[in-house]
Amino acid sequence: MAWEFLTVYWREMIRFVRFRTQLFASLLQPALWMAFFGVAMSSNFNRFTSAIPPPPGVFSVDYLTFMAAGVIAMTTLFTSLFGGISLLFDKNWGLMREMLASPMPRTHIMMGVSLSGMTKSFIQVSIIMAFGLLLGVRFFPGFSPVQIAVSVIGIYAFVGVFSLGFLLFSSTISMRLETPEGLQGIITLLTLPIFFVSNALYPIQAFPPILQALSIYNPLTHLVSGIRYFALGSDFFAVGARYTYTTADVLGSFAYLVAFATVMYFLARRTFQRAVVT
Amino acid sequence: MGGDDIIEVRGLEHVFDGFTAVRGISFTVRKGEIFSFLGPNGAGKSTTINILITLLPLQKGTVRVAGHDVAQEPGRVRESIGIVFQEDVLDRDLTVWETMEFHGRLYSIPRDERRRRIDDLLRVVELDPKRNERTKNLSGGMKRRLQIARGLMTRPKVLFLDEPTQGLDPQTRMRMWEYIRQVNKTGTTIFLTTHYMEEADMLSDRISIIDDGRIIVSGTPDALKNTLGEDVVYLETEDDGKARETLRGVEEVRSIKESPRGLSITISTDGSHCLPRIVERVRGAGIGISSVNLKKPTMDDVFVHYTGRELRDTTG
Image (tube, rainbow over all chains, first blue to last red; front, side, top):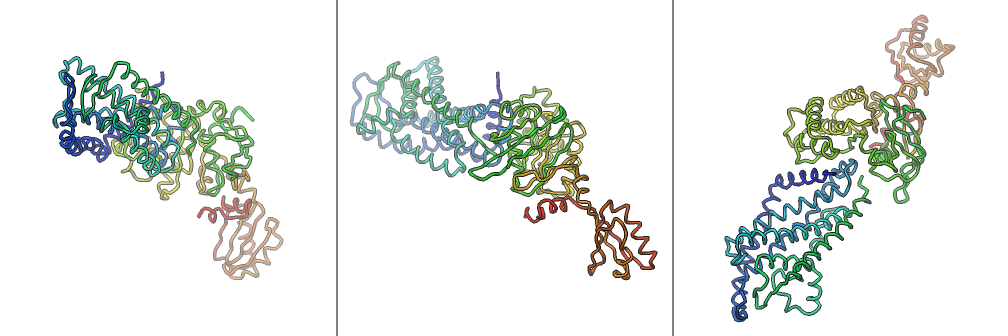
């Protein structure tokens, strides 16, 4: 069994801890979203939506709790899309050549980088959940400790697969590009539609049909659905809409993300095997 | 080709987007020697080295390194070689020790063996006291030494050095040459590229001069210089005209030129043997000599001879 990808992973994590500004920014950014956007929006949304009463017997979720799942998803998306940038630096500083000229299989480079990006997402998600509790996010309502444990594992599973998909995508782009600016441009172009044409901040039920159709194919929508299912349960009411998830829905979303990550894996593998860096 | 050749290159050609960087070169490197590629920047040295170390795909020709074909078994080639890249290829934020550890793990050297080699090599290149220093804080010479230590970590059969002393100060360069010789003494074959003539001259067992994608001439440094057969004696005398007359008829003297700074006498054989006779003859004619100078051809002269250009001019 070849474990060299752990070597790349090890180096990536050293870099993560050592670039202090990057470390603090990546940990602080989601907290700031929760603290400012979350609190500001929830005070408004709660006012609007209090006019719509939840159907009898359905558990009602406040906006801050509703969007916390969206912030987890958003942070994972941003971190993962940027995750490949370290490959771009490796390429520009010539460090990629050391790896490419070694006997280590090339897929290990992208897997090492991607797994470290996944780890960073797990750390961020943990911070958001802990910080959210302080701000008044009510995840896991009425759950038993065992249910909470299962839910946390479920959330990490969704976050893990989703981030892996986008990290591999980001690695592919980084290997094909020459400059960090190029990557920056592509990421900016992608994040807006992915983030806003999703259920991260608001229900998609009220979208125009085209956006609604698009949002169904958006991996972010499936990530958010998965997180909400595990954090809030299979039947709740939020922002004027009722959410029900069947087990099949959730498995379907997970399968969609697995399929997405698999496609991205093969794309990245092809790119790495053909890459010529001198 | 004998069994002692560790690198065999035949008919190697490489084209980048219509630009031919390497135009059908063939050469061999013998086990245990220091072999240099000498040529100006842009001559095709780096392209060749990149194909040999499997970073560039082989387009045309055959290349075998350490007994393996680079196109058929790139993995086996990679396991057999060490590389010191042209620029500093170091992660600025890793420490010296981490740089070595990372490399050893890339090559799957078992932990205990890896740690032992790191300790040994850091001592050899005198970086042991710096093991916990981040590489960005090292001097230029230290960075180079670290990269040589890294290149040696896998006990390579061939160590590739791409312009190993570029940008280093003269003292540091001399130290690097010592390290390279030391490494070679332990049995490692060295393939180096350089555009410094004295570097190729001082270090190499054999040199190939490469220009414009072609190998122009190959041989030992002495053989290359001797093929020119043009040692020059510079003589300053009381009466250059008279001295010139006296030297007419000396068999080895090919030509004599007068210049404001004395006579320059081109000798057809080894100048050091001919010099005493020239001096005796001029003195015997009662002409005082104020200075004598013997100039052997340099690699620069060899380069000029074969390309019609000065190497220094082309490197900028």
